[in-house]
Length: 455
Image (tube, rainbow, N blue to C red; front, side, top):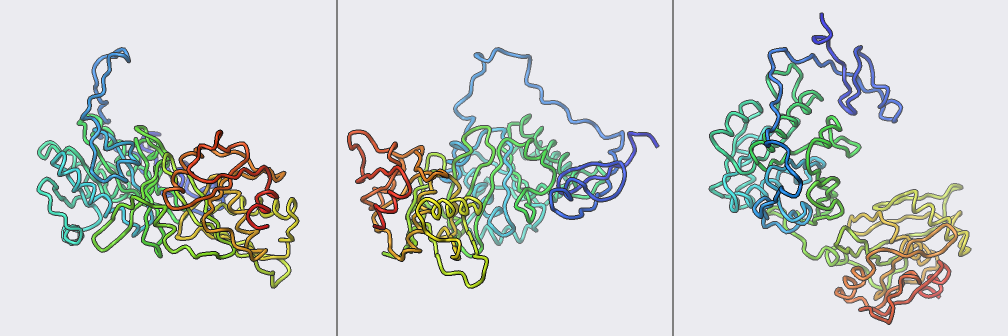
């Protein structure tokens, strides 16, 4: 047996390869447990290599033009925002998310929208039967003539069909279930996913077909299969949402054609996904009035300000070690802020249980919400509510100082549009000349903020 024909044992989680069977040492060191290496046989020598995409001889950069029709708007505003203004011709987009979050629903609605603008669109369903997809389409009210459905798992057959159909867009649901018959590995293996992704990338670039791939995620929330798949595609989108909440967030973690900071917000209903054009009002719809431990902060997602309600509950610990439970925020960041509150303000939280939650199932990760988290915990401990017409912004340092945040003007405009009248911001960020839609008060330390809002 030659080295070319030798088998390779590969980890299905991280892609680690070994010439011998066993368990993956990388996953074991990372705490993922004992993951068995799966055998992958080398492809037969008769398999033809992927032909490179021929784009002509090298040209000066100034001679390359981008035509107007290279980017197509789908009509789904939230999706176009995340993609950077629309779908780029010849792009390869990977959409991942938890099972049942609505990936197939989103792409079926996207295929309907593209079929109305640039038909035809080919939807390849490798997991569900044609009847199942038809039932979903009927529920969503989709009956576009330019949308073609095909249930096929053989990627070679799909490639042969593209010459006859000549689609302007292609949807493959999902990349883990299609396979190439030349490879002896099972569908969903590292070799199959990598080779199928590379083949689809070649087709997308060579034929100018906008291609969407559905990718499964592991229990840790990462895309299943090799990480090389994320490096191969042009755009990686994560479709997130809690099963107990109706809202869904589409977030870009990689985008060669736009910003990775934008998000799109949808609401899952009986007729499919509906755009939420005012997500701040959506998250604050059930906000209680004058409740201790409730503070409104403004989180900036790309160019979109998003108002969220932070809730904190501080109660006396029943046992020796106090509990710290955090939902929707970074646990270590919250523990750090509680230590600052105890050291710099003098609140004895070491004997208190602290529970922090971002209401409505939202998520906040940026440091601009630090001051809101501190004030929510202080409000609950003192049992004094923060005024309901105040929005709070600021990053908190370990010495108790309140630092400046970016995008303050956008955040204040969004708060003013939703009826807020006052804002507590870092002292260095106070707009000069009083040019602000809100009554702004600057604070330099956490002590000043607590005195200003809680007396």
